[in-house]
Image 1 (cartoon, rainbow, N blue to C red):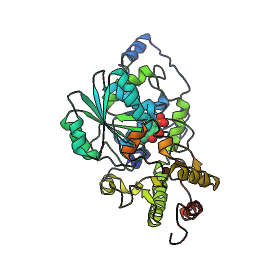
Image 2 (cartoon, rainbow, N blue to C red):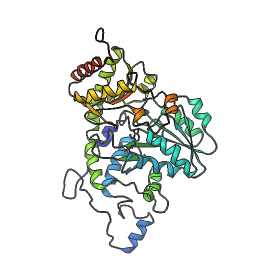
Image 3 (tube, rainbow, N blue to C red):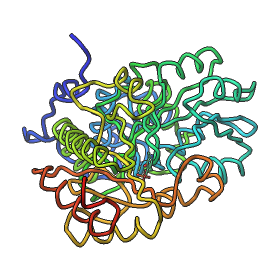
Image 4 (cartoon, helix red, strand yellow):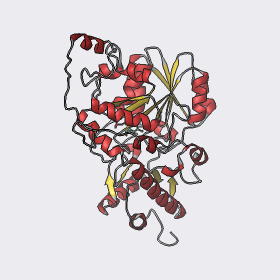
Length: 404
Ligand code: PLP
């Protein structure tokens, strides 16, 4: 049988303390021990199944971690209070002062800022490369490199990382391939393609209701245990722990992820295809015109499609701002950062989610002034949405009335 991450989540079954169909939420920051010896063993990491203190682990976080590990096909996972709360400890656990990271240059602005401005203060240097050029990636690796870092579908340019070939390079040089899979849960399973560690911002598609932040690191049991080590684990010591009440709510939302991803993908495909036909500059990995289309087709679990993210370049920032304000007033969605909500969200990356990236670097990456990033929602009638959106574009002169 072929691997289907949604089936692996489905097969997990929990029983609450009182036979509930949802596991009971552990509303405790600390846990009792019947014997002082077990407490000592737990601190030493030798008492499996015992809880110590919720910054280390809690039953609710372990349940959610187990489900996300099943989704990504890893031995274990560690949930965090935000995506950055998963990314930063993971990289700090893998790298010491003096080490080096090779990272895709088109990544989420916060991750970029962390690598460029913060990790560098700790003596960890990063080379930013065009991740689609394997020769450039390999040439950037030095004897000090510990990590190769990328996003499966990059934020905001929607470039596709060739995970299979990046994993080959990582193995050859004995470094870890860390993949942020936030834009493509279920669609892409990076571990199956050879990645070592997969990260998600749960804030986005996985939770899907824009009511909380969250993050996860999915990896080997050994690595997850090292993140939680009481003496030197970056997650344990930096403390970006998710609260149990939140992890229980994220877990409930995870159960509908497969249905939502299909709808996001279907709606985005519809809009991308139609707006491209209308003559707009649309970037969507599901379009044949996308430079990574063939590669992405070879990587995805097809039933979840090409995802819900697309960009349209409308020429200037003024036009982009006008259009976003008009679309919001027409109830098409919200002028807001983030993604994976039931309503469409739109923002201009240059002045929002990528604003941490200096202007000249934005230009060299291809983040243009008029670029609008869309996270397409779960609209019931996407044809109707298309007509209203198109009218907005005609009203602002983004699309010509005749022939569009
Ligand atoms: N990774 C990607 C691809 C993102 O887009 C974001 C946030 O936008 C993050 C990580 C950070 O996640 P969070 O905001 O949950 O910390």
